Amino acid sequence: MKVVLFCGGRGMRMREFSGSIPKPMVPVGPRPVMWHLMRYYAHFGHTDFVLALGYQGDVIKRYFLDYEEWRSNDFVLRNGKLELLATDLDDWTITFVDTGLDANIGERLLAVREHLDGEEMFCANYADGLSDAPLDVMIDRLTTSDAAGIFLCVPPSQSFHVVTLDERDRAVELRPAAEAGILVNGGYFVFRREIWNHLRPGEELVLEPFRRLMAQRRLLAHRHDGFWMGMDTFKDRQALDELHQAGNPPWAVWERSR
Image (cartoon, rainbow, N blue to C red; front, top):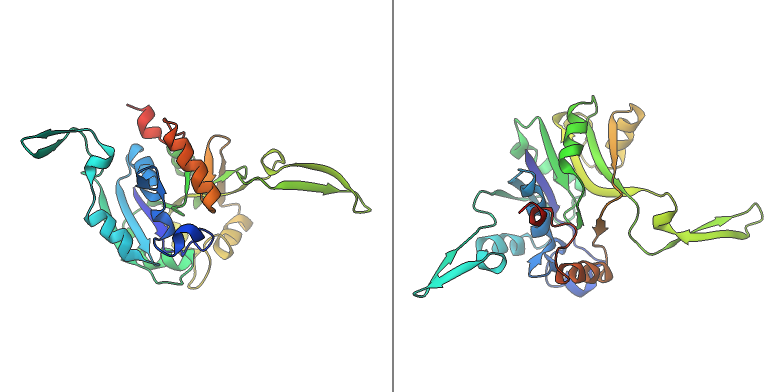
């Protein structure tokens, strides 16, 4: 199953990095966040990636053209020659597609449609959040349903608080958003090819097409209460980096399978 990664956003809220590298290339440990995401999909057997590029897409292209396997794999240095004991992407296929600087997610998806010809189902991802969500379960749920797609929904990881007011606008309750029963779009999607019938030029993927599908009860949501963290701010990036440096990061499902 092919995996579309939306890599075109400017990442304006990541001001510490946005002037030099695109958001999917912001590092978590020694590798960019999109690398961790690609390892996640590869763990479930999906190694055919379509990168929908935009802002500084050349940086992403150059990263993979100059990819250094030794950074994340054990190796032997013998007589000045490096012998890798494992590899990351020797069985990966990566298609790089320029989808425009200012296109929205729906437009980027339409721009890579020709690279998904013949696919009955495919995955898609915002490429800026990490999770240990059970992708195989999501795919199975979609396969055994009549829905056109399924997406991950999660409690928000942000630290804001939800306020409850009475009829006179007096505050009666204040609690963390993660404990308030709120669910947000986690940015992990699986679609049937039918999604093309619901997505029109210029539309944002999770607005008009999703509303039409929801009106037909043709869109599934998979609630995940395990690990999920979006990388929207520098603080989010620091938190992910600290989890990585502590060892056994919760999103690294490929490590737990060894």
